[in-house]
Length: 64
Image: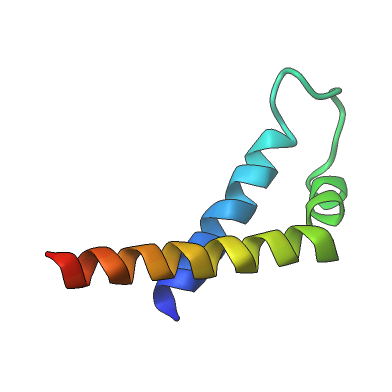
């Protein structure tokens, strides 16, 4: 579960960093960015990505 949680953390931190890049409009507050990234769709993607990442890591651990 720690690996899945870490992958979810990395997913959301990447989304948050993306909210403050030069490509996006300026003047966003941190509260607006957090409301923008914490959606059910993003959560679903994060959980599925976390589970896939966990399965890949476990497969590679067994191979080595």
